[in-house]
Amino acid sequence: MAKPLLVRNVPRDICSWIDQRRAQYNMSQQEVVLSILDKAVEADIELKLPLFSGQPQILERVVPQTLPFTFIDLFAGIGGFRAALEKLGGRCRFSCEYDKYAKRTYAAWYGDTPQGDIRKVKIADIPNHDLLAAGFPCQPFSIAGVSKRQSLGMAHGFKCVTQGNLFFQLATIIEAKRPAVLLLENVKNLKSHDKQRTWRVIQERLNELNYWIFDKVIDAAGWVPQHRERVYIVCFDKKAFPAKPPFEFPNPPEGERPKLLEILEQDPDPKYTLTEHLWNYLQRYAEGHRAKGNGFGYGLVEDLTRIARTLSARYYKDGSEILIPQGNGKPPRRLTPLECARLMGFDEKKIVVSDTQAYRQFGNAVVPKVVEAVGRQIMKVLFWKLSQEESLFCRAPRRKRATG
Image 1: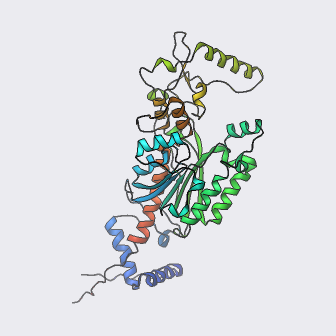
Image 2 (image 1 turned 45 degrees about the vertical axis):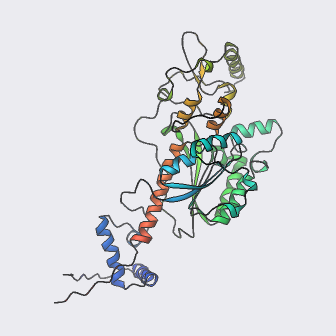
Image 3 (image 1 turned 120 degrees about the horizontal axis):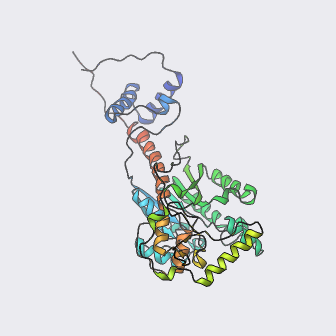
C-alpha cells in the first residue's frame, strides 16, 4: 500500500527544474519525483544530480567496462587510438593515414586499410560517429622539430603548410560531422609553441565550434617504462552536453611504476649492438657538447629498474636516446622493434615492416594504455549522460491510486 509523503519548503529552482521535466516528458509532478526515486532505489545509488547538489557529478554506480559507441581514427599512424578505443567498446567506422608503411602495419593489425591524404578525403564520405580521435601531426610543434626547422630556415607550427595546417582540415571535419566527443593528442610543446599563440588559436577554433575543452599534459611513465609527455585534449559538444560535463583526466595507476627491465628480450639479436665505430662517435659527440655546456648526448640506461627517455621517430638512426648496457666491455645496444612495441604499450603483434620503419612508427605513436585510461574517463561521462537523461528521467508508468 502506498504511503503519502509530504515535502515542504521546496526551493524555487528545484520546482522550476521539476516543471521543466514535466513539460519535457509529459508527466505529472508526482510522476517526475517518483521516477527519480524509483531509479535511485533500483540502482542503490547516492543521489548526486544537479537537482540535489547544484553541480553535475558522475553517478556513484559501477561504470561498465565497455559502452557501445562509434569512432573515426584520423592521422591514425599504427592505430594507438584504435587499439585502446576498441577495448572500451568502440567500433571504428573510418580511418585515415598518409604514410604508406604505417598503413601497411594498420591493415595487418586491424584488417582495415586507412584512407590516404586527409586533404583529399570528401567529408561526405566520412560516416557519422560518436567520437573523433586524432593525433594530428606534431613535428611542426615539437621542440626537436622546431629546432631543426629553424636551423634549416623552414617554417614550423601553423606556418608549416604540409603538416601544421592540417589542424584546420581537422576542424573542418569536426564542424561538418559534429561528433559528441573529440579525443586529440599532440606533443607537450604544442601549448608553449610560438609564445602560446598556437595553443590560443586551437582553443579559439574549438570554442568557435562550440565544444567544452579539457586539456592536460600526461606523462606516460605511469603506464609504460618511458618518460613521454603529451598533451591530451578532450572536448564535448555543447549541443549534446548543455551543462559542462564532469570530466576528469586519469591519475597514473597506483603502485610501482613499470620498469624498463620488464620489457627487454632475453636473447636479442646481436645485430642491435652498436658498432665500435658508432659507439666511439657517440661518446666523442657527447663529450664535445658537454665541454660547451650543452646537454646533448646519448642516453645510456644504467639502471634498468628505472624508466627510459622518450622514444622518438629518429631512433632508427643510431638509437642514441635509449641504449642498453651489455657489460664485459661490449658496446651498448639499441632496443629491438619488439621492445619498442612493449615500451609503447602495444599488444605484441607481428611487425610487417622493416626495422627502420618500425622504429619510426613506434616513435610517432600514441601510447594505447594512456588513451585507454583517458577513454575510461570519457566513458564515465557518457554513462553519466545516459543515466541522467535516459534512465533517471525516463517516463515512469502511471501508478494506480491506492484504495481502501
